[in-house]
Length: 253
Image (cartoon, rainbow, N blue to C red; front, side, top):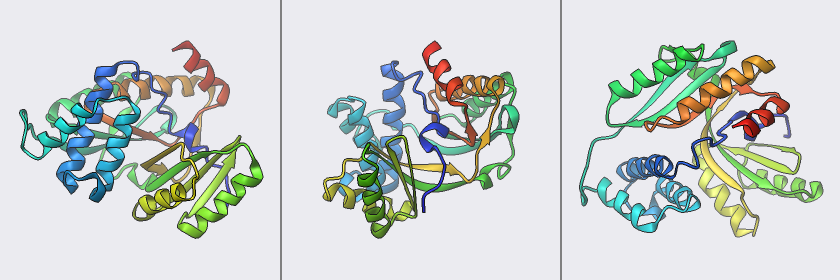
């Protein structure tokens, strides 16, 4: 069942803007609002909201902010501006496929900003369906485990619990499952006292494109600029960056 994927490297999400506390909270608030409107205001019965709240707490977002966002979504607070969930497709340097997940109160602003950044970064906005076929929705769970025997044992348990596949590389165990089984698998692992490092629902590329050094750096800059937009929640790509380029870029930034 094991193969080579490097999800933790492919997904990028370097977090250049993570130090911008206000911007991070804006993105988290929008996700909480969207999750609440989709499935209600009780995290226990709304897996998307539960995941959003957990991510907010990991980012040290005050509980008052979280509760205000939930109330706002339920129409109990001020500023109930409509938020649209949109998914834009693009093509980046070297033919890299891009999916840009958006939560916005202005569709025109969002598409204009995304198009502008893509064009300035040697990319372009693509028509609906142009690259979406290259991705599939998956639950991705990462577990840090330096002991390879223990990691293999956890992986086999996870397969019995509903994981579809796993990879193990450099002390990082990656489990993948369907979105429908994601919550149950994570809960089952935690019940067995297995510490989950991260868990997310994501659009995972079916295959990756390995970039040369120059194109890799160009693509990293493009991804950063997209991720810094307030309307953009997540950016997915099928780019796989050379480790040395990724490390140099992170250090430089």
